Length: 159
Picture (cartoon, rainbow, N blue to C red):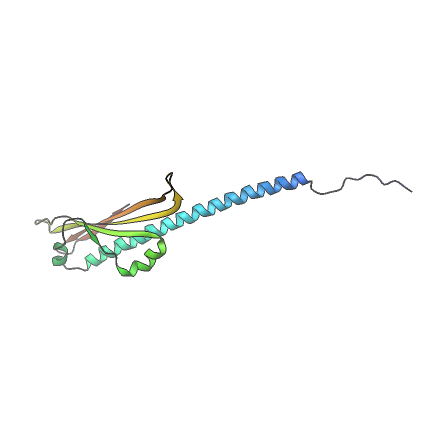
């Protein structure tokens, strides 16, 4: 009976398979972290966009108001209710939104009033602090508008 020559069989060793599996697991973990981070950034961007829409809505409501209405606004910091048309978006955002308005006292020479709107929202995360309390983050977006007795309107925004 003839002897067979010993040939090396092709394939992967167990160590090579384990190393490849480890590299894939590390890669998948990194991918999951990246998706989680991107998802959080998208949520934050949606909330900022919603805050901006609320601010612009309030400014436009005052643009259509009469000078008598604008000049009668109180000059103290006033919490105002957010228009109900935003209730669905606010509920979906997972944050608590509030809206405040401050009006400068009228200038009798120029008949211009500055109105500042501030939207504040609080996000409660699933992360906990060292005492076991859920972490909360507060964000704010402000928009200022000037209204004139004779139709001069101007606005700018800061975050």
